[in-house]
Image 1 (tube, rainbow, N blue to C red):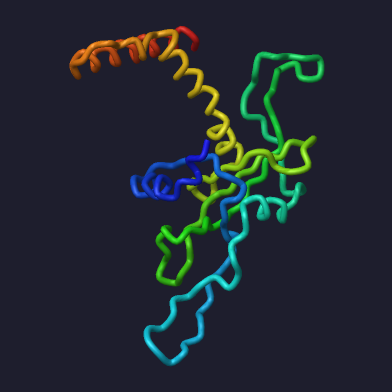
Image 2 (cartoon, helix red, strand yellow):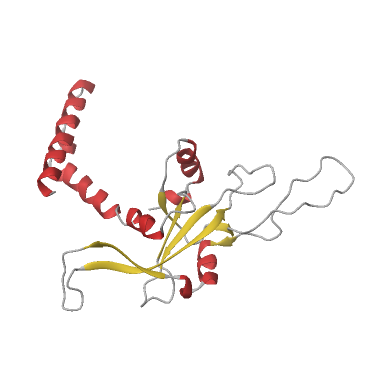
Amino acid sequence: SGYGDATEFRLGLDQRGLAYVLEADPTATAYPGDAVPEDRPYRGRGRYPAPAYPDKPSTLQKLVLAAGRRACRRITWRNGTKKTADNPTAAMRSDFLAIRVRPANRNIPRASDGSLPEAWLIAEWPPEQPAPVTYWLSNMTADTRPKTMVRLAKIRWRIEHDCRELKHGLGLHHFEGRSFTGWHRHVTLTVLAQAFCTLLRL
Protein backbone atom coordinates (compact mmCIF):
# COMPACT_ATOMS: atom_id res chain seq x y z
CA SER A 1 0.00 0.00 0.00
CA GLY A 2 1.04 3.60 -0.44
CA TYR A 3 2.63 3.24 -3.88
CA GLY A 4 -0.18 5.32 -5.34
CA ASP A 5 0.89 8.24 -3.14
CA ALA A 6 4.38 8.33 -4.71
CA THR A 7 3.99 10.70 -7.65
CA GLU A 8 7.49 9.98 -8.99
CA PHE A 9 6.78 6.25 -8.95
CA ARG A 10 3.54 6.68 -10.91
CA LEU A 11 5.26 8.98 -13.40
CA GLY A 12 8.05 6.44 -13.85
CA LEU A 13 5.52 3.73 -14.71
CA ASP A 14 3.78 6.10 -17.13
CA GLN A 15 7.05 6.94 -18.87
CA ARG A 16 7.78 3.24 -19.33
CA GLY A 17 4.33 2.54 -20.75
CA LEU A 18 3.37 0.30 -17.81
CA ALA A 19 -0.24 0.14 -16.65
CA TYR A 20 -0.88 0.21 -12.91
CA VAL A 21 -3.56 0.02 -10.23
CA LEU A 22 -2.02 1.40 -7.02
CA GLU A 23 -3.53 1.90 -3.58
CA ALA A 24 -3.69 5.57 -2.57
CA ASP A 25 -4.42 7.55 0.56
CA PRO A 26 -7.93 9.08 0.68
CA THR A 27 -6.36 12.43 1.64
CA ALA A 28 -4.44 12.64 -1.65
CA THR A 29 -5.82 15.37 -3.90
CA ALA A 30 -7.18 15.50 -7.43
CA TYR A 31 -9.46 17.49 -9.69
CA PRO A 32 -12.62 16.02 -11.24
CA GLY A 33 -12.03 14.47 -14.64
CA ASP A 34 -14.07 17.17 -16.37
CA ALA A 35 -12.23 20.08 -14.73
CA VAL A 36 -10.83 22.57 -17.26
CA PRO A 37 -8.01 25.11 -16.70
CA GLU A 38 -8.88 28.74 -17.30
CA ASP A 39 -6.79 31.63 -18.58
CA ARG A 40 -5.68 34.03 -15.87
CA PRO A 41 -5.73 37.81 -16.42
CA TYR A 42 -2.53 39.48 -17.52
CA ARG A 43 -1.43 42.18 -15.10
CA GLY A 44 0.66 44.08 -17.65
CA ARG A 45 4.08 42.98 -16.40
CA GLY A 46 6.32 40.01 -16.99
CA ARG A 47 5.26 36.78 -18.62
CA TYR A 48 1.68 35.89 -19.32
CA PRO A 49 0.39 33.58 -16.55
CA ALA A 50 -0.19 29.96 -17.49
CA PRO A 51 -3.77 28.62 -17.47
CA ALA A 52 -4.81 27.17 -14.11
CA TYR A 53 -7.74 25.37 -12.57
CA PRO A 54 -10.13 27.89 -10.96
CA ASP A 55 -10.80 25.76 -7.87
CA LYS A 56 -8.55 23.97 -5.43
CA PRO A 57 -8.23 20.19 -5.76
CA SER A 58 -10.34 17.96 -3.52
CA THR A 59 -9.29 14.89 -1.60
CA LEU A 60 -9.98 11.52 -3.17
CA GLN A 61 -12.45 10.83 -0.39
CA LYS A 62 -14.43 14.01 -1.10
CA LEU A 63 -14.56 13.23 -4.83
CA VAL A 64 -15.94 9.75 -4.14
CA LEU A 65 -18.46 10.98 -1.59
CA ALA A 66 -19.62 13.64 -4.06
CA ALA A 67 -20.27 10.93 -6.65
CA GLY A 68 -22.30 9.10 -4.01
CA ARG A 69 -23.21 5.51 -3.36
CA ARG A 70 -25.57 5.60 -6.33
CA ALA A 71 -22.50 5.49 -8.58
CA CYS A 72 -21.34 2.18 -7.06
CA ARG A 73 -21.79 -1.20 -8.66
CA ARG A 74 -21.44 -4.68 -7.20
CA ILE A 75 -18.34 -6.47 -8.50
CA THR A 76 -17.15 -10.03 -7.88
CA TRP A 77 -13.38 -10.33 -8.28
CA ARG A 78 -12.87 -14.03 -7.50
CA ASN A 79 -14.26 -17.05 -5.70
CA GLY A 80 -12.84 -17.87 -2.29
CA THR A 81 -12.96 -21.05 -0.20
CA LYS A 82 -15.50 -20.20 2.53
CA LYS A 83 -18.81 -21.37 1.08
CA THR A 84 -22.06 -20.71 2.91
CA ALA A 85 -25.73 -21.34 2.28
CA ASP A 86 -26.12 -17.71 1.25
CA ASN A 87 -22.95 -17.78 -0.86
CA PRO A 88 -22.51 -21.30 -2.29
CA THR A 89 -19.72 -20.25 -4.68
CA ALA A 90 -17.79 -18.31 -2.00
CA ALA A 91 -17.87 -15.31 -4.32
CA MET A 92 -15.78 -12.43 -3.03
CA ARG A 93 -17.64 -9.25 -3.90
CA SER A 94 -18.23 -5.72 -2.76
CA ASP A 95 -19.46 -2.37 -4.06
CA PHE A 96 -17.01 -0.28 -6.07
CA LEU A 97 -17.03 3.13 -7.64
CA ALA A 98 -14.81 4.18 -10.58
CA ILE A 99 -14.57 7.79 -11.72
CA ARG A 100 -12.18 9.80 -13.87
CA VAL A 101 -10.00 12.31 -12.01
CA ARG A 102 -6.88 14.40 -12.56
CA PRO A 103 -4.37 13.76 -9.73
CA ALA A 104 -2.94 17.05 -8.45
CA ASN A 105 0.75 17.49 -7.73
CA ARG A 106 3.26 20.16 -8.71
CA ASN A 107 5.61 17.46 -10.06
CA ILE A 108 3.10 16.15 -12.61
CA PRO A 109 3.80 17.60 -16.09
CA ARG A 110 0.92 19.63 -17.53
CA ALA A 111 -0.19 19.91 -21.13
CA SER A 112 0.25 23.18 -23.03
CA ASP A 113 -3.30 24.19 -22.04
CA GLY A 114 -2.47 23.70 -18.35
CA SER A 115 -4.43 20.46 -17.97
CA LEU A 116 -3.27 17.54 -15.85
CA PRO A 117 -3.45 13.97 -17.19
CA GLU A 118 -6.54 11.91 -16.42
CA ALA A 119 -6.55 8.77 -14.31
CA TRP A 120 -9.02 6.36 -12.78
CA LEU A 121 -9.99 6.65 -9.13
CA ILE A 122 -11.43 3.38 -7.82
CA ALA A 123 -12.93 3.10 -4.35
CA GLU A 124 -14.32 0.11 -2.47
CA TRP A 125 -17.47 1.04 -0.57
CA PRO A 126 -18.94 -2.02 1.17
CA PRO A 127 -22.73 -1.87 1.68
CA GLU A 128 -22.37 -2.01 5.45
CA GLN A 129 -19.84 0.84 5.63
CA PRO A 130 -20.76 4.55 5.86
CA ALA A 131 -17.77 5.54 3.71
CA PRO A 132 -15.32 3.91 1.27
CA VAL A 133 -12.61 1.78 2.87
CA THR A 134 -9.91 1.59 0.16
CA TYR A 135 -8.85 3.79 -2.74
CA TRP A 136 -6.75 3.12 -5.84
CA LEU A 137 -5.39 5.21 -8.72
CA SER A 138 -4.93 3.71 -12.18
CA ASN A 139 -3.55 4.92 -15.49
CA MET A 140 -5.48 2.35 -17.51
CA THR A 141 -7.35 3.62 -20.56
CA ALA A 142 -10.70 5.39 -20.25
CA ASP A 143 -12.53 2.43 -21.81
CA THR A 144 -11.22 -0.08 -19.25
CA ARG A 145 -13.98 -1.95 -17.42
CA PRO A 146 -14.09 -1.31 -13.65
CA LYS A 147 -14.18 -5.08 -13.06
CA THR A 148 -10.78 -5.44 -14.75
CA MET A 149 -9.22 -2.82 -12.48
CA VAL A 150 -10.83 -4.27 -9.36
CA ARG A 151 -9.44 -7.73 -10.14
CA LEU A 152 -5.96 -6.25 -10.55
CA ALA A 153 -6.30 -4.24 -7.33
CA LYS A 154 -7.40 -7.31 -5.41
CA ILE A 155 -4.63 -9.57 -6.74
CA ARG A 156 -2.36 -8.24 -4.01
CA TRP A 157 -3.26 -11.22 -1.80
CA ARG A 158 -1.78 -13.54 -4.46
CA ILE A 159 1.44 -11.54 -4.62
CA GLU A 160 1.81 -11.59 -0.83
CA HIS A 161 1.10 -15.33 -0.76
CA ASP A 162 3.74 -16.02 -3.42
CA CYS A 163 6.31 -13.89 -1.56
CA ARG A 164 5.68 -15.84 1.65
CA GLU A 165 5.98 -19.11 -0.25
CA LEU A 166 9.26 -18.01 -1.84
CA LYS A 167 10.75 -16.87 1.45
CA HIS A 168 9.51 -19.47 3.92
CA GLY A 169 8.50 -22.49 1.86
CA LEU A 170 11.15 -22.49 -0.86
CA GLY A 171 14.09 -20.89 0.93
CA LEU A 172 14.62 -17.62 -0.92
CA HIS A 173 16.01 -16.00 2.25
CA HIS A 174 18.19 -18.97 3.21
CA PHE A 175 21.13 -18.02 1.00
CA GLU A 176 24.27 -17.40 3.06
CA GLY A 177 26.93 -17.20 0.35
CA ARG A 178 28.92 -14.13 -0.61
CA SER A 179 29.23 -14.34 -4.40
CA PHE A 180 26.85 -12.92 -6.96
CA THR A 181 27.07 -16.15 -8.97
CA GLY A 182 25.98 -18.20 -5.99
CA TRP A 183 23.15 -15.80 -5.18
CA HIS A 184 22.01 -15.81 -8.81
CA ARG A 185 21.89 -19.61 -8.91
CA HIS A 186 20.02 -19.74 -5.60
CA VAL A 187 17.38 -17.25 -6.76
CA THR A 188 17.01 -19.00 -10.13
CA LEU A 189 16.41 -22.40 -8.52
CA THR A 190 13.97 -20.88 -6.02
CA VAL A 191 11.93 -19.22 -8.75
CA LEU A 192 11.91 -22.43 -10.81
CA ALA A 193 10.65 -24.33 -7.76
CA GLN A 194 7.84 -21.81 -7.35
CA ALA A 195 6.93 -22.09 -11.04
CA PHE A 196 6.69 -25.88 -10.60
CA CYS A 197 4.45 -25.47 -7.53
CA THR A 198 2.25 -23.06 -9.47
CA LEU A 199 1.87 -25.57 -12.32
CA LEU A 200 0.78 -28.21 -9.82
CA ARG A 201 -1.96 -25.87 -8.56
CA LEU A 202 -3.39 -25.15 -12.02
